[in-house]
Amino acid sequence: GEQVEQLPSILRVQEGSSASINCTYENSASNYFPWYKQEPGENPKLIIDIRSNMERKQTQGLIVLLDKKAKRFSLHITDTQPGDSAMYFCAATTDYAQGLTFGLGTRVSVFP
Amino acid sequence: EAAVTQSPRSKVAVTGGKVTLSCHQTNNHDYMYWYRQDTGHGLRLIHYSYVADSTEKGDIPDGYKASRPSQENFSLILELASLSQTAVYFCASTLSGQGYEQYFGPGTRLTVL
Image (cartoon, rainbow over all chains, first blue to last red; front, side):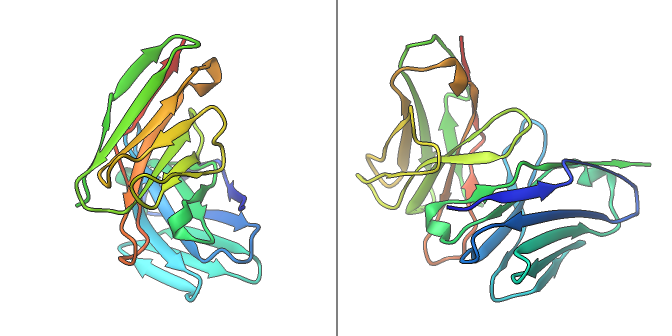
C-alpha cells in the first residue's frame, strides 16, 4: 500500500504571493503524483500531475516538484488569486490502474 | 471532457438498510473507481474495476460491495448501512493507456440515520 502525508492543513496567503503545499509518501515504488483542486460542494479536478521520470513540471501558474530520494513532492501556486481559494489534495500511486492514495488536503485561502 | 454521472446525488438511509449508489460513464473508459470522502478529509479508495463483471478491493472495502455489470456502469452496494458510512461518495473513471487522469463524478451525499 501507500501512505501520503500532506502539510499544511490550512494555508492563508495574500493575493499575489505564492502558496506551497508539501506531501510525503512511503512507498518508493510510487510513480505517479497528481494534484487535485476541489471547490466546496464540487468534485475533485486534476490541476497538474508529475510522473516519477520527472523532477519538475510547470503549467499555468502551477509548479510541481518531485524529490524521489526524499520521497517528497510539492505544489507551488505562483501569483495567487481569489480563485485559487479551495481545497487541494495530493495523491500518489504505484499503479494508476489500482487507484490513488490521497493526502488529507490543504485548505487554501487567498486574502486581499 | 469526460462525463461521469452518479445517482442519486443525495440520499438518506436508515441504519441496517440496503443502499445502492450508481455510476455511469459515457467515455468508454475501462477503469472505474469508488472513493469515499469524509467531511474535511481526503478521498479513500473502496473498490475498483478494470473490466465488466470484475471488481477489486481497494483500501477500505469492509461493509461495501461493488458491481460492474457493463463497461459504462459501476455500482456500490451497502448491504447493511451503518452510521459510520455517512460520507460523500465519488465515482471516477480513467482510460488505460491514455494518460493517468481520473475523471470524477459529481458525488453522492449519503446520510445514514
